[in-house]
Structures are given as C-alpha cells and as structure tokens.
Image (cartoon, rainbow, N blue to C red; front, side):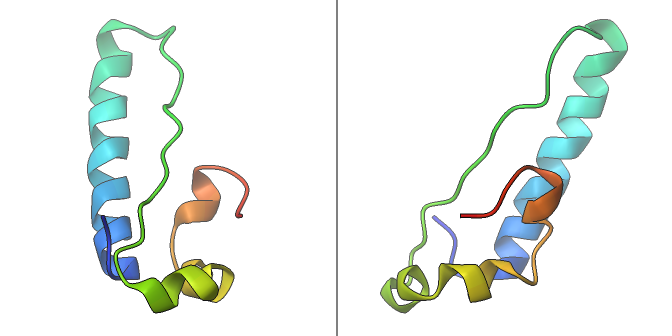
Length: 63
C-alpha cells in the first residue's frame, strides 16, 4: 500500500532498475504492469489528482 506519491515513485524507480537488470540476460522480458493499493481512504476519491504528480504515466494509462 502507498500513502504518498513519493512512495509510488520510489517503488517505480526500484522496479525500473530491476527490469533493466533483467533485460541484460533476458531481453525478451516485457516490463511488468504495476498498480497501487491506496492506503489513505481520501486518496481513493481523488486518485486522478493524487497520481497526476507521479511517474505513473511511464507505466501505462492512468485510471
């Protein structure tokens, strides 16, 4: 679960780093789809605004 955009960005950075490392030995591997479980209930009612400042767009379409 995440409670801030920074937590998502940190996780996305680590996932990207791991993905790049895997590509070295397995270039056929596709980038994984990722999602979030929002911890703060208020965020679930305004997720578009909450995610607009994140790097989510590099992973796929926004909600």
